[in-house]
Image 1 (cartoon, rainbow, N blue to C red):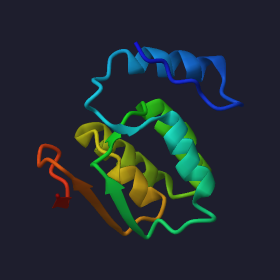
Image 2 (tube, rainbow, N blue to C red):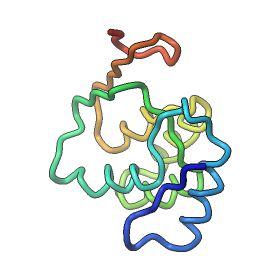
Image 3 (cartoon, rainbow, N blue to C red):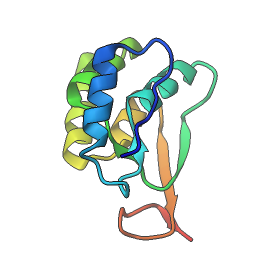
Image 4 (cartoon, rainbow, N blue to C red):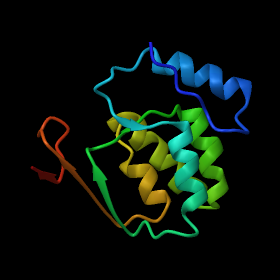
Length: 121
C-alpha cells in the first residue's frame, strides 16, 4: 500500500480519512483528493479557473462532508455548494466542484475513452 504523506497543517482526522479512503480506491481512479482540493481553493485567487483542462478526467476523491467544509470557504451560495456536492457524489467526477470555483469551460484529455474525456490522444 502506498501512503500519501499530507502537507503541514493537516489534522489527524484528515490523515486517518485520507489513508482509509486511499486503501479502498483503485489505483486507476486518478483524481483530486482533500489535499488537491485545498491546493485548488488556495490558488484560485492567483489563477483563473475559467477555462480548465485536465490531463485525464479526474475523479472527486473527497467525501461529501469534507467537500461541504472546504467549499464553505468559497463564499459561494449554499445552494450552489449543495448542488455541486450532490452532482460530484453522483457522478464521482470533479467538474461540479470546479464550477463552484469559477470554471466555465471544463475539458479533459485522456488516452482512453473509458472516463469519457473531451479529447483523446
